[in-house]
Image 1 (spheres, rainbow, N blue to C red):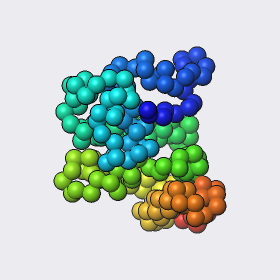
Image 2 (cartoon, rainbow, N blue to C red; image 1 turned 120 degrees about the vertical axis):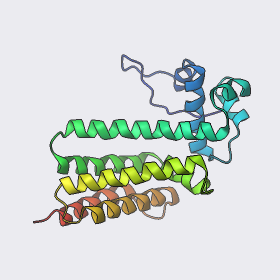
Image 3 (tube, rainbow, N blue to C red; image 1 turned 45 degrees about the vertical axis):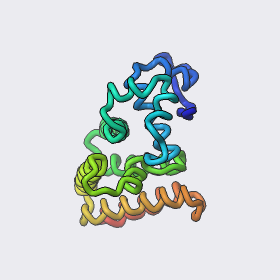
Length: 209
């Protein structure tokens, strides 16, 4: 059976049973939510549609009525992950409107929290590792989103006053990937804290006048 996130709140902010929360969703939403959890925990290749349908409280016929193939379901899960990331980015911009340096530092703190709280790593990165076929639609989607994210982070670094914005964006991205791997492998103590300190030092160095 799929494990869902423990911290689920209702509209009033009260904690509710996550399994019950998933069960109340429409079949399509249940399937996506369940598939995301199972793909994240067990891998994209290791989970079949029959197991997803059963865990979502439905059947293969219903799953295939909403998604023509497992590949379509994978892409929908990736879209859902991207949409959540987009919402977080917009919230960060709203909190620090007109303050690009504060936005960049908030991005660092947000990613440090992510490294701390998720030992399974980035869903997009995990999918890219497993899905290696160049023409696979999920891989194309990942590559497009990663490229767009790189441009967005570069633009933020430039707005924050970085002298070499593209280099800083790439350095932050590589540092984040390393912290995620360290979190999974256990090779470095407190990788989230080290990521944050190093990233803040890099930003200070690149934006020094």
